[in-house]
Every structure is written in C-alpha cells, then in structure tokens.
Length: 362
Image (tube, rainbow, N blue to C red; front, side, top):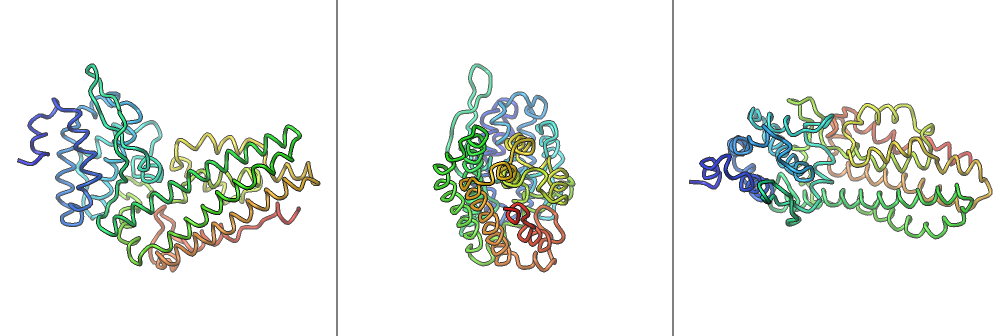
C-alpha cells in the first residue's frame, strides 16, 4: 500500500499528515512522476484532494500563511496536469476554488511561483485541535527534475532575488523623495551607492537568465503558460508590481504611456497582492520628474534620475537579450508569451524603446 493509499484509509483523521504529504509530494516527487507519467500526477492529485476535503468544507481551518503555500502546491498540481494535455480532477479544481481568497486568481501566478515559492516552507502542526504553521525547510518547487530542474529552481530564485533588490531600491527612492520634500535633496548622495549597486545586480541576474543551458527554459516554460480551462493568464514577469512602482516614482503617473497604464489596470488581479498597495501609493505620490521641475538646480535629483533611467534601459535590453536566446520563437511570433501576449517582440520593444520626455526636458 502506497503512502497516499494509507492516507486514504485515515482520511479526515490525519489533517496534518495529509497537508505534509501534499507539500512533500509537490516539492520532491511530482517532477519525476510528471516526467514519467503525467496521468499518475492526476491520479495522485485526486487522492490529495479527497484527503483534504476537510479544508474545502472549512477553508478557515488553515492559517492564512499556510493557506497561501498550500494553494501554490495545489495550483502547481493543476498546472502540471492541464499543461500535459489532461483535464484536472474536479475534486482538485473544487478545492482550489474553495481556498481562493476574494478576487484571487485561481490559476498559477507570478506571485505563487516566484515570491511564495521562495519563502521558507511552513509545516502544519496540530496544537490544541487547531492547525498552526511552523517554519520548515527552504526548497523550491519545480515542474522538472535533474539538470533542467536545477535551472528551473535557479530561474525562480533569480526572479525572487530581483524582486527583493527592487523592493530595497523602492524604499531608498522613497527616502530620497521624503528628503526632497523636507528640503534636504543633498541627502540623496548617501543613498546613491547602494541604489547603483543593487540595480547593477538586477541587470546582471537578468542577463544570467540568458546564460541558462540551451533548451532548459523551453522544457519548464511549458507549464507556465495560460490556464485555458480557467481562463487565467500564466505566471509572467510582466506581472511584477515593483518594476512599474519604481518607474512611476521616476516618471510620475502622468508620465506612463496610455497603453502601459491600461495594461496595469487590466492586469491588476495578476499583480502580487503584497505589492499592490505600494504601487497605488506611488501612483498617488510625488515623482522624481516632478521634483526636478521644482528643483532644477539640484544635481543630486538629476543624478538619481539618470541612475534610474540608465537602469531601465539596461534592464530591458538584458531581458530582451535573454528572451532572444531562450525563446527565439516567441520573438518570431510562433508561440505566445506566458502572460498570453501574441506579439511578444512588439511588447518588449515598446517597453525597451519607450520615449523619455523626463530626460529630454532636463
């Protein structure tokens, strides 16, 4: 009798064991099972869903931080099945539907695969008849195994590290804007070395994505496409909130092209929930472009503007180069982007070659 079958015999009496088995399966066993027999993943997913029916009936059983990680496990199971050309078990889709929060995308998202996936594993533990979350190991979930799986894990890690560096830069630029509003723009000088260093690292890690062994990205990219069954877009880097947040802090909300602003509005549900408030704050707050107009003689403000503008140019060129190497067919228009874009080359070129009125004016 397999471990999953044993859990079936104790269904409802082993909630912690069922949750632990799900996490262990997705992190350690699913990639190899998926490579050998995708149908077995579907069979296993149905058993997990049956064992976790107590969660479907009462989602509040799980603390919020544990619920978030369980959702990633379940969504990855569904993506593995759907992108193998199979139909996900109804019990699995019903469990995801029940656990999804208000306005939460029910397909696998960028936040799921990059940000939540990078977090330390939370282990369920029963304390006084309630399930609580305690820290566990740190192991990235992947769809593939072996050398390809290592490349896949590194790809997600790079994106998570880039998000962390962008988060640091956003805080630093916010401090710079506060200094300007307080009449102390000279304080920006102390922030510039760290901002430069962190943004250089972002560009470097973006370039490293293009250095991945040939063919690896295409093998796991299959599982990152749009979930047609749910009508949900895939987990694309286009759905980061920190890049547009930093860009708004540079240019101001009125400095965004209409098409870019519309894209942000249309895809708001796909942006990481943890970062949406920061983007809204930037959209309603001051910008460096506006600050320069009010302080045209400030060399510190101008220098920070030039640092950020140079970063966006280098970052988007590095990203375009990585896509050209890893998914050249996307630039030729023969495959869609993971966010569902049909004209990937046009989208990337528009972002890379956008007009820079705030630089031309200074």
